[in-house]
Image (cartoon, rainbow, N blue to C red; front, side, top):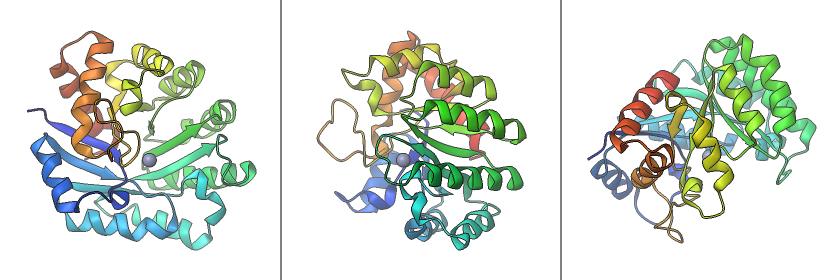
Amino acid sequence: MYKIIETHCHLDYLKDKPLEEILKEASDNGIQKIMTIAVEPDNFDAVFKLANTYEQIFCSQGIHPHDAKLCTDDALFIIKERQSHPKVLAVGEIGLDYHYDNSPREKQQEVFKDQLEIAIETNKPVVIHSRDADEDMITILNEYAPQMKRKGVIHSFTAGEELARRALELGFYLGFNGIITFKKAENVRDIVRLCPLERILLETDAPFLTPIPHRGKENAPKNIPFILEKIAEIKEVEPRLIEETCYQNSIDAFGF
Ligand SMILES: [Zn+2]
């Protein structure tokens, strides 16, 4: 059995099974630690409570670009205040999403920058979501990353090669999930090829993006081995090497 850290999922959104069963299946598949990710003020408390209730669960606190329009000073205050809690490992998920444009782009940029400031002030890493926004993401990271003691991850990486290379140069990790098992994702597999092993993080983004061979079912942390083995196949190395390297990467990135 593998020894794995799941760096990105949304446990409070999983609906198909009781949480106890999801956690049991995860540990039966070698998932030793799990980071569950906040996305909007309404779920800050839910993920914080999960991290406080279960030893193996850790969390982030942050506002997703989809929900940038919901950001308030109070929400930013909570994100900052909770960074000192030992089970809160990051500011996130934060970033830019110009694919759905659920919040106005200017608002997304403002809220993203506000939260990067929090990461800088608290010396915490970030969990970044970036979709169809490569140019603005590169501009903002160029400005803020040099001030960040700890960088973090661009999770569910599906962006272009230029953003990948710049993020790696700046010190970020890239997070890969079930997308790399999808037939049409050759562009993402190309990014896996160019990303050094020492910068890869494993994630599911559950309940979304279920890997092959479980497409159609709700995703869960137990599915990480499919992603791990796909990365081994793409990189043409033994799965054990991916297991060991990514485990250490997760600790280095977030301090699990
Ligand atoms: Zn997510």
